[in-house]
Image (cartoon, rainbow, N blue to C red):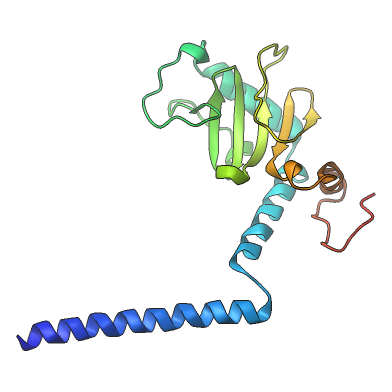
Length: 190
């Protein structure tokens, strides 16, 4: 009986300590003005810079087309067993992902049923990344995309922020040109 009481007391003490630690960090982040989301946003800004500035877009286009050429010949009738994504199905395991794409550390590498490759950098309602179309693509382009920018013919950048920021295209151009995300108070994006 005494051992059980000791186990319950240890569990309660552990929960109290964890609660105090979490509360401390929450209060500290509120006082310093930083939030957990801000840290996450900085990570995504760095990943956008890596994708838009530090990545060779010609090589990325070639790598995406290589993936598609090794994929199913008829993506509309391909039977993938597993979770489906709104953008398509995951690249089959037998297909080697080229190094330029692996270095991006994408959230998902997908083959769209309409016949193109999607490299998704972030999932959910906050997704961004690139779509890579085969040469001479005449198929249907994805219609839910809130914003997009053509980096090269056949390589298209998309980002959820286009729906929230009216002049987001200027920010993307700034990243491509300067290799950094503009400061929040920066108004001249030339």
